[in-house]
Length: 201
Image (cartoon, rainbow, N blue to C red; front, top):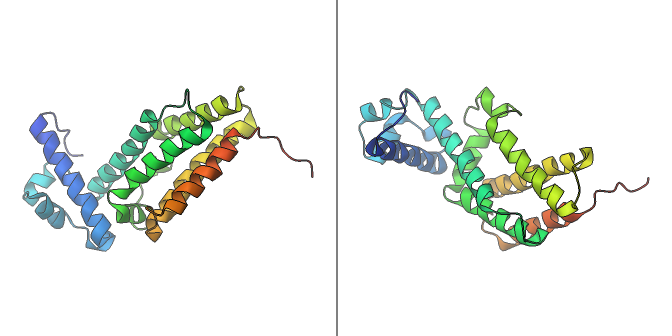
């Protein structure tokens, strides 16, 4: 961003811009995404938009960052302790689906069309570290042991399974399909509670 919003009014303006940008990406795709359209949708002049975002690439970065923060917020809200694996996974999957349902077309654009900055591919980014640590904690809790290499791989696969199914459902327009939700919950909860033993060949 060109400058960080410090006052409540400035923060509200930035949120309006990001929300308008997300709606345009969802409805019109990357080809229809312009700063003029975003400013008009937000009810602002394009000059006001440029006070915070120098170009549409910086705005895309802010939209993607907000989405990642929304996902982390879901995870922080979904407690692990005191729940069965199925209850925990149901809460998590339902929360993630809700986070992806506000602007369902947005995620296809972010995944397939919009430029991706190098920082989002970094496996050691702050987001990735917290994200995977959450799944590792879940595996350790439901398998009732200290994590070994197989468990850490399991945590990575669980995160990829949830991401992959939800992102592809967003692409296909099936996020609200009850079967997608119930089968994803069943898949992940059964694997999460599995001991992780490798069958003999």
